[in-house]
Image 1 (spheres, rainbow, N blue to C red):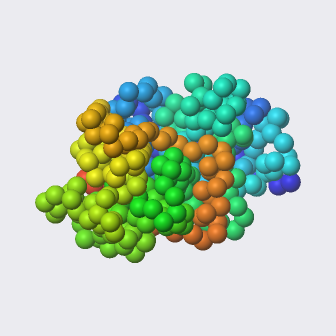
Image 2: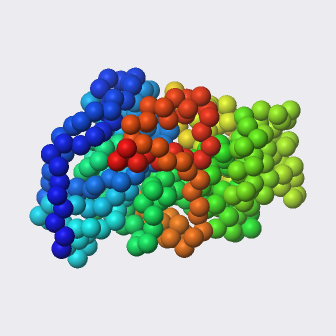
Image 3: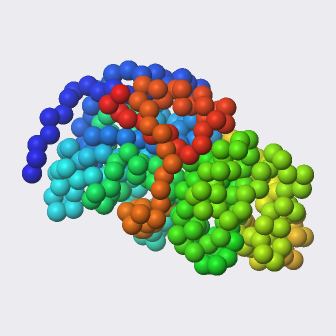
Length: 356
């Protein structure tokens, strides 16, 4: 067993007031409780949820001051007395996800729906997250990262990858069927295309704003691309992208604006499913009742994956079926990433290196 030298202070990005900005400063390193581990976070992906956490524009109270981040990949350097050596020895490569912990005893936890636990701890929202060099997480919930996996490359899988993989499972789409991915050029979308392909699904990528997004989506395996900014009839164009013209069997809504959520039921085929994943602030979802009933359309939400979904999503990645398009910047540059995010200039995912 290796003993790690743990400092008393560390660099972190701290949101001190709702609305931001995130401030790069030194803060104390915390000690893990009995059922917790201390992770030396090497890299952390930057998710649109982190921007919402800083701005405080979701109907969910955030911890303040707050260290954001929930896609942290690193090494276990200390642990509580209840953490089994055979399960998580010091030096284990692990990931800290959005779901930082749950009670493990309620009806939801007992049915593998631990993300719905009423006592769930949320990294970078209700508890400090991964935009720091050392972060605390419940041992039962850290992701076990397979050996040989690069920590910088796998970081975005810990939220974006798991979330879209869960959404595809929830959609009920079967191999050979078609799935429309709205917001396909972003961080979640870029992985959704690949997970769908690995699961035997054909994808229609829907996005707009740059030629780079279209090229990226097609390179990752999208069978068709629809540019919402150029399309004169989005519904017709999405339907035409399927061989029989009836539309996709499922739609994954990853968009950060409200309008795409209102359009999806118009182009999904009868008996299809619309899966809501993106969370535009203060947005509503509307659909005509008549069409929803007579076309037997399913509309549902999909939250983050459970521990089993996490293991499955990481297994796809470890087998080389998922390539994460990402760019690495220093943790000190996080606020610049948020600015690009607000301006819609990000293709793929940004990962921060906590050592810079």
